[in-house]
Image (cartoon, rainbow, N blue to C red; front, side):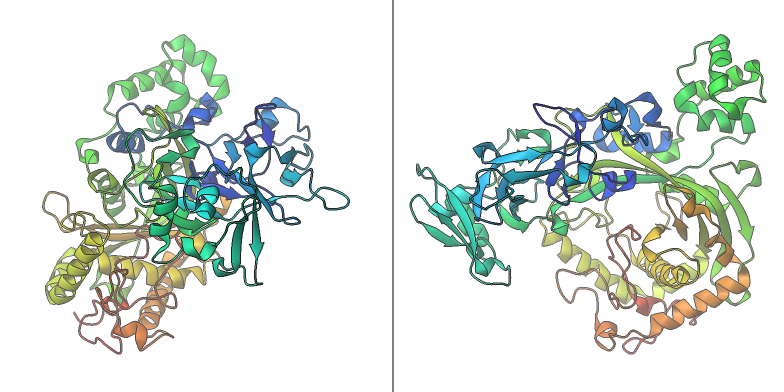
Length: 617
């Protein structure tokens, strides 16, 4: 990671993993370093190189549908090579950042001032970039000047804007001509806003910070500094259109300050021929080839193609160039081609990044499951398309057709977006559609409860309540996925947060009927393909784990409160009998924000004994 600075454009200040840069600390997110707080800047400031390009036509088309046809490529975040020379140009390769918030506080004298005040000096240590910090060079503290820290209060709005807290306007309760010199004092030891007092040492005006929070906080902030200024700090600009959203005071590092809006696909081979598969895999290098002579020059850099002739490679390149990059089915749901491949495994399609092996269905669960497939190898590619603040976009609706306000990644229309490819293994379980359809009729009442709860949830967020409801089938599949995911993580050797789900749910109509779940690991290194998860797909092993998962679904340490919960009991939740002790999973594992979960759909609970899918055929 590199920091932008006028005197020295690149200074390394820390390290992040590629997946973190996209989905935890992506564009517009605030990263809390040991002595600094910084924001990842927009794509306009990123550096791209051809060797960072990722090839995945299906994902690229999905990104284009969401963001526009200007997007032409997917690039992985720049990764600096291992080197002991911090002054090497390649060592400074990274993601551009800038200090944010711009207001800092001296822990010794409690002076509160912005960076542009000139009171703080940057101290950079090339051989220890993690020690980069700002110091209060004219502080009265004896000895070395103290390291200043970022102030921990910001303001944000639901349109994705983020700005510094209006300290001067807040303490003066409006705009003022006072040449303000501020300090932030703690009146107690709790660190709460009620114990914090901001004071202007010039005019002696004071105000407690608690007045910026709570029910009256938005009103107080609007009175002193107006509505949201529409600032996108990561783009170095303000929105031209006036933002009508009220400002909300949030804490630095709050989980609701940044939510990624992303797309992901499982790479599915579209060809059977081994050479065509290799050409597709290395298309980022081969797509610019214009003649057979170019193939001869490029082969030395692609050892995987060494055993094929120049003529055959050139013919394969021409076939790849003429063929459609995606079928018409992929123009809608990106999961449809994946479902077709997983539900109908063809050995000839297997490749180095996609390998399926059918496995017998456990005898006890033959009435419920159509097929079990070991996914010995898979490749997932994820792309960042934007982000939201205050509220997560993960409500199981398509962002491009919903009312969710997604903040942009760059100032103009993007020509590329950041992406990351990860490899892993998994287990695919296909449910019997006929049995599931029969159960859906029995679960009509609970389906209506979920539908009403979803509509109320959308209305409370000023969103269209008539779109995006996934149905009771999705709730069953999602609940089963979480229950089994928690159980498998206890034995496969992977942490619970490293196992992800992919739910395939559709009741037919305009789309093919789908009913299945894919549980898989997805790690950017070899750890995701150790075989521990695939081994559990053996019939006896899988039957034992499903038994235990369903047994655990019937009881919860939070019962009877958990079992009594129903969809729509409050306007903040979209789940039935589910809590952190039974079904809720880490954010990295769930694709739907831990919504539409109900263990009473899986097994009998204290509250409900006639709704379970299993055991009531």
